[in-house]
Image (cartoon, rainbow, N blue to C red; front, side, top):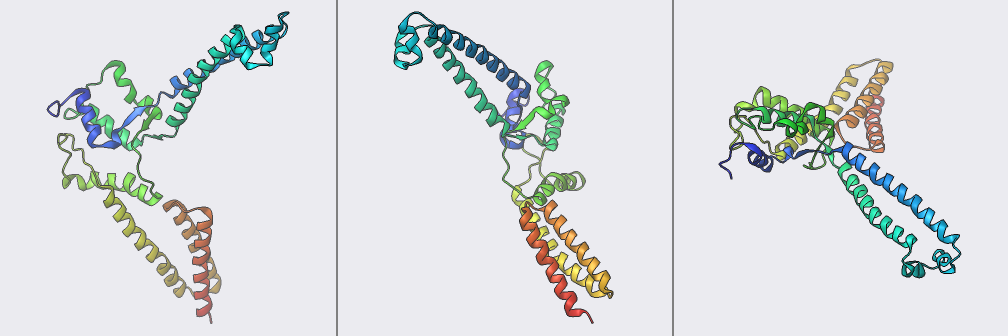
Length: 279
């Protein structure tokens, strides 16, 4: 199996070693159409049930009229109304199952554009997929289908800074420098496909976060020290407070109340410094 270097076998082996390529179409339109058809069928069955229910209610046969009052008699009577109930029951099972499955599919994350681009490049590359997908089988990975692609690979929850490092900074560094020193995945040397350990991203993000959190208050206090005008100091405090709030909003996953508290604390430190150094 590992000797096969083309076709679906080679493609599936790539997915085995690099889970971010677990990218498939959700077939959102087909699923929606299927649900609409099931819904239409149930609407028709509902109308049929209302008709036979009214028919039994107006029947001259007292036994049939009691079908509305006693479920056991309805079941044992084995009439049109009960047959329609059984038909609806089976269709409801199918409809509800389809609804729940669609809800599960909708919870899956859309495929990341950079992963889709890498996969498309691999499929076309002479040392990768060699363009083995042809005709309609190529359609799932056409550019027009990109919005319909979902990923089964669930990444651990990360903050915005970590996401930026992994999705923006590392690909940029790879194109500039890292591709020269990183070893490609076995069997994909020709493509140059490289896998990076998430632990390195998190370590780098942690160091970067610590440096920024240390540098920010230091720069703020140092700037306030050299500003002599009280009005200009107050303007600087407003600026640094806004910078603090924006940094927390765009670089972390902090909630609004947490951002408010952190910004207020930061502003308080600056106000205390200004008060202690004012003449």
